[in-house]
Amino acid sequence: MKLKSITFRCSQSQLCRLEEAMLYLDETNRTSFITTALEEFLAFAEQKQISDLNLFELVHEIDAMGRGEKFANVA
Image 1 (cartoon, one colour):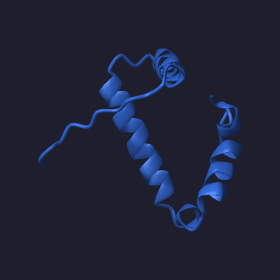
Image 2: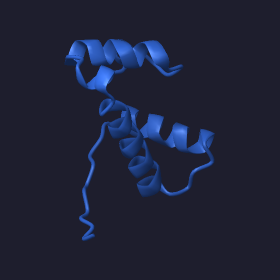
Image 3: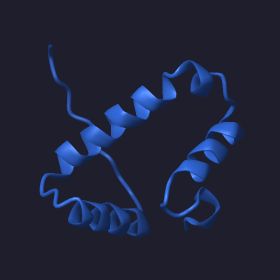
Image 4: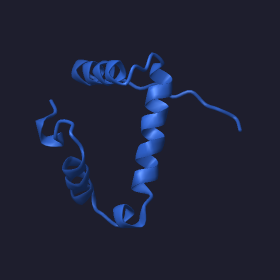
């Protein structure tokens, strides 16, 4: 498999949340952390009951399951 690089740009608040999550999980490799998060989200989104949701329903579903900050509260 040929790997390709992707560059992510984020706001300061997103960077702070990323760094806090990495500290919480004792993760030192940002690329590994983002790759794992993306793979887990894609596996979640590919489930039949999730893939049938529209964007608003998907956001509601994610908000309801996590202990993180709700989408509406993220600046």
